[in-house]
Image (cartoon, rainbow over all chains, first blue to last red; front, side):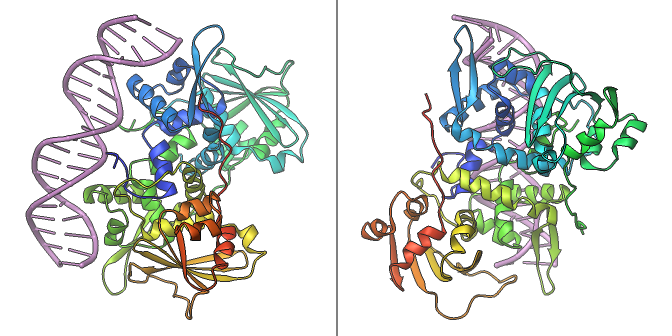
Length: 233
Length: 233
DNA sequence: CCGGATCCGAATCGATACTG
DNA sequence: CAGTATCGATTCGGATCCGG
């Protein structure tokens, strides 16, 4: 038996042996946004030791989750296999579940481009969006800037900053309908703990271009319900 | 910042900090079947060191996932909070995902009552079951025996062996429609890699009581599709 | 027997340095 | 850019022990 096997013949156990090691799920999270170079992953996971990143990528390849693809001109990228992409609903569900337990950011916590992209996908409500007018948001949180385009029941997110060699997909041209500049307080907007109006009043979010009312459409489109919580005792 | 924090303000990261440590997800898997004593958990996870079980239960309580409940007469059980129970679809999806990568069991792998119960829940197809006659199966795999009752789109699983102090729910009375005795080869039946007929011919599953044709209903009711797999290269 | 706590060697992780 | 190498700090695993 493998040294670190859980010793059970079970699907959950097998899954956890494939993607349960420390950092593995976060590598998958970032690769769900798109193929990434080794260096991109390292920047997106600032606290990962380089030897661990290297080891995880090797294990994920052996598990058939990740593939190493040489680029035409130079370098190479890692990308999810189709089997790895099947983790998308699981990672989104985990993000939704974990969202409920997020408090204030700890000292030193960062928001990365890929984590914010996945957070928007996590919070996206296609059923709500389909009943609203299309909208094109530019969202800034810390150093990260994204362009989130909602058309019908579909969300498309592109990274504006920090810049990255584009590996596919092109940026929408033209101006966004609204430019939202936020801090971590955007969590409370998405959780519905504060209304869009309060968020602007309390400077959690600023609408620096476009109509402030668009923040209401944003908050309706991107929302995670607080789960019912029973007492711990 | 906490020592082992990932240093990101993100829902996925928060989730992984809550249930990403080694063994934590398997503790949750077993608690999804029902409340369990410390000793039950230890038997259901034969390779977990006792200090790790103790540490995980403490962490899961601090995270609001698990609750410690004293029993009326003596002892105590651990059970999931409502927040913890929200992990059910995630654990089931992980089980389905991992199922696709399961090969033959490793030397020393075991099948436990709770893992087999969750495997049946993982594989259960309510949409298929609702179109079939109700069925009451007794399933044996290794030392584990379960009673799986399918009525309409609902599955109920009870453990027969190994015996456990019942914490709720009572066993169906009467005889099951079929008694299935299987080994790990039942995986191939659920995966659709072998037909029920082949499974009986090759002795992967024996129908020791009831009509052998009931194995077909079983295989239709409990099924996990192989995902589309692309080449690793 | 239940529900752990303690101790210690082995394996893994984290941080930094270094290389083709 | 894409990793290896190294080494101290943690965590894990296995066994034992303990109070009720």
